[in-house]
Image (cartoon, rainbow, N blue to C red):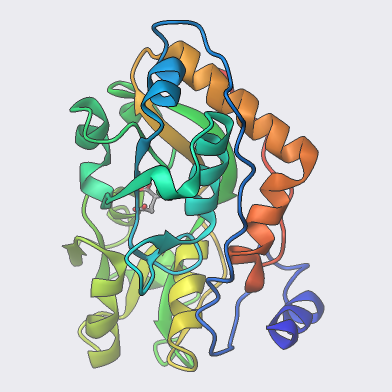
Length: 290
Ligand code: GLU
């Protein structure tokens, strides 16, 4: 891992907000144990009071995205999104053992929040105006950018989305990636999860997989030597925590928690124990209390 980061610093850090890995480790790292508040007090009737009283929380995350949310052998997910979830739960007095993790794929995040199937979603979830019509977002807590994953050696010499004209690409339904790439090609396979796109890329059915650079970097790291990230992000993807629309108190509480985690080092520790095994530690983005 050290090799990867050293390589990244020398060769790529100046060119990119993130660095790619060629190492064989899954890169998931050992999760930190987020501090758990003892008997925190919240105003009656708030979501915080309800969750703290229940002593448990249900969080939606990805289960197939190395570095951010990847289901481990014991059934619980690991990754940076998972650590962000634990930090928020900890402030509610809820330990990691009392978090119920539910897999959310890109297309079902809004309905899962709207139907109350999850209390919040931390799942590489881009904040945008369309989604804000039906859910609210705390954050952002990370800023990604859409990119392309190609076969190692880049046989089609793809340097950006413009090179995809007339070529087939794989992405995920309901993602911003699907929407954004439609401006460049109409030949799109849209599946449920990004890991489903790796088979078509290996077989040559598609020329590229597209989504956020950090998701692609995790998949490249997990499949060492097989793929490479083009590393020319062409969109901005601010990651937010999705929650029930108009629950302003809960949104403010999560935003406060993120700012505290920026200030006390727990955000950086969460990064370093997960995505930071492969990617450089970024500066956290300013929280947007819209
Ligand atoms: N961040 C983008 C989105 O929220 C792409 C990654 C994903 O599908 O989770 O749609």
